[in-house]
Every structure is written in C-alpha cells, then in structure tokens.
Length: 155
Picture: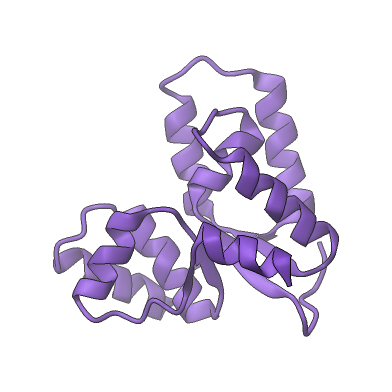
C-alpha cells in the first residue's frame, strides 16, 4: 500500500467500480476503469474502499454464478493495492441522519459520509444519491464524477 503523496487525490470507490475487479460485469464501465488504472499507475490518485463495499459485493455474488478464482484474485488485488478505510463515528451518525431524511440506500450513505469525514472523494455514478444530497443542501464537494475523473487524466 502506498501512502498518500501531496499531489494524489484520495478516491473512495463506489461499489460499482469494485465489482468488475472481482468478476461482476458492469455496463459502460471500462473507460472509467482504464482512466483509474492510468491515474493510479502515475501516482495521481490513491484508491480507498470500505468493508461496506465488500459486503455489497459479497451480497451480489451470493445471487449469481461466479468464478471463485477471479473473486479471490480480485479481493487479493484490492487488499494489496487499495487502502481500507472505515467511517468515523461522526460518519455513522451522519449516515443515519441522512437515511432518516429519506434516502433508502444506507451503504451509499455510509460511503458518502466516510468520504466526507475522512476527506476523500467518493467516485460514484449514482445520480439519485447526488440529487438527494443536493436537494437537502448537503455538501457534494466530497463526490467526484466519472467526467471529473476523466478531466484529471487530461491535465
């Protein structure tokens, strides 16, 4: 695991970007994964994940046929190349508050509040989450979109 250098952007991945690593197909994701690989290999980003990402992946795998070797290889690769992070107590409490305001996906809220309280950028394509956060006046500067990731590569 690399430590964060001054020029690196800390990116917490939404589970959407982790699923292909362990063998679950996601539509229209290859271009952004290529961009992430490029940015990572040039030390422009540091990639984070949480136990909630793994929980979400395991739940998905439990419903489909999967390649055990691929899953093991993907999990091993994540453990070796990405940084595990956890919500702060404040992050847990904020996720609960946001849930009470009407957003149903607690995992997405935990990822968002982890990014916010750990000063990371949550990479997500979940427009429903982004719209909800904007609607209630929540700070969305802790979210980074695929378009913004591609713009970093262009710099």
